[in-house]
Structure formats: C-alpha cells, structure tokens
Length: 361
Ligand code: PMP
Image: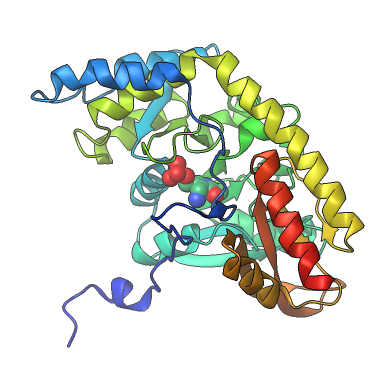
C-alpha cells in the first residue's frame, strides 16, 4: 500500500525534455538561447562567490529592483523564484484547495496539469481550435467556475500569441489568471505588464524567466510580477532562500545588460524568420511564431520518424504528441503531433535543414 497522498499516486510525473550532457549535439529541443549570456553575468557571479559562506538576501531585493525597473514598477511587485517553474508551483499551493478547478489551454505546457494534479486540484483542458484560437462560447462557463487559469503567451508548442482582450476573457470572475510569459521577450512587441494596470489587474499574475531571452537556463531564475498583495501572499509559501546568491547576482547583471539581451533577441528573430520560410518551402505547415521556437507539421505526417532520423544525426528537436486535441476541422477530436524546433544559431539551423533535406533526397 502506498504511503503517498492519493494525489501523488494519481498524477503522472512530468517528463522534461532530453538533456544530453555530452557535447556534439545540435540542441534544438528545449528552447534554450543558443547565444551565451552577458559577460557581466560571470563577473557578478565571481564577485558573489566571496559571500558563499553566508545566506543570500531572502527577498532578493537588489534583483527585485532590477526586474521591477524593466516595467517602471516597485520591487514589491516582484517575486524571484528558482526558475518560472517554482513560481508555478507556488501559485498552485497559494490558490488551490482539493477539488478547485484549474484550467489551461491544450495543447500547451503540460506542467500545469501535473502541478494541479499534485495539489489535488480538478484540472481541465481548454482544447484549442486547430488554428490555436479559443472557442470562447464553448469555454465561458468553465472559466466562470475556475480558481486558476494558466495561459502561456506566446503559447508552447505553437508559438502563437493571444491579445490582451482574449486573455481578459480567460480571467475567472472569482479566481486568478496566470499569464506565463516565459517567451515574452521574443514577441515582436513584448508585453509591458499593461494587463496588471487594468482594473482586473489585481487578479492577474505574469511570470517571466531568465532561462530563455537572457540565456540563463542553467542558472535557474525566474520572477513573478503582480500586485503587491498577491506577491505578499505568494511570498509566505516560498522557501526562505529559494534563490541562491549566485543566481540572484548573475540574474541582476543579465537584466541590467539590456543591450546584450536585445542583440541576441534580434539574431533569434532573424533566424526564426529564415527557419520558418525554409520549412515552408520544404512542405511543412509552420505556425507564425512569436517565440524562440516554431511548431512544424507535415501533411504527410511521419513526425516521430523525422525526429528519430534527426536524432541519429545528433540533431535534437522535440517530438510532441497531444491526444485529444483538435486535429483538423473543429470538433474532429484526435491526436495532434508535430515537431517543436528551437531557433538556434544560423549554423545550427543550417545543419538541421541539411539533415532534414538529406532524409527526403
Ligand atoms: N513556462 C513555459 C511555457 C515553458 O516552456 C517553460 C520552460 N520549460 C517554463 C515556464 C519554465 O521555465 P524555467 O526555466 O524558468 O523554469
């Protein structure tokens, strides 16, 4: 007999993307930035090593000020965390009692479903239309009943972005909307926290990460942005020292070097356009992406085999499969599958395209 809480036994473990630890891979599978972080990050971390014997600032105030400064806010609007994933866990623990309804779009980031299950919430999918839009009439009643709605914007795996007006329709009247902006910096016009200044803004939380646009996936640092009352409640849940001193110092240096981040972003956006058009020329359907990855499907299918042959050539992309999604016309329930390809450097993308072309030759 299991000694775990039933919710733990019932919930399937989240499986992160493959992380080969040896070199030699063209790694386009977990949406990392292919460019290194600002050199100021290493300098700040080196300086912070002189304080390794003492605990870090539990609130990370210096980092919070830098993050808040990006949006003209005060530091008490910011909650740093050990990656965005930790903030998602904190949100579940903050707002979900057993049986409370948690919603997120589907296909989307599967971790929401896992975290809701572990917390004994009642997770339900909001199945997206085949063109990644919402059928608001179909979901309105369920949103009205929800306690917590998670929406990645841009969405993963598709890379599309929804308007603020669409997002507001997903705000539960007696609950919280979490807009997960892990990829927000890669939008043509990044969100500037405008949603938080609306009258409804006191029930909206935006999550950001330094894993993607700031090239710091290995450091583990993210932050939530929300009204100070929400941040104060969430802060009760976090561990006292949830962010280590090296991460806080490195993350602050990264945020303060906006020119570095923006130059990497410019390169990623240019390569995204090239990757999109080359895949379309090769017969793939590619969603217009506002993120640092693209979602590609081929009318002939065979996505798993394409993933495997790329992998055998040391090119790693993400094969994803979503049972119960809407594959074709609305109402046609079946399995959606495809390839999510991270935008790498130009040479990495060239290698990917070369292996892809050699398959069909
Ligand atoms: N949200 C989404 C939509 C993501 O794709 C990811 C990355 N897997 C995260 C959050 C988590 O990011 P972090 O590295 O900050 O935990």
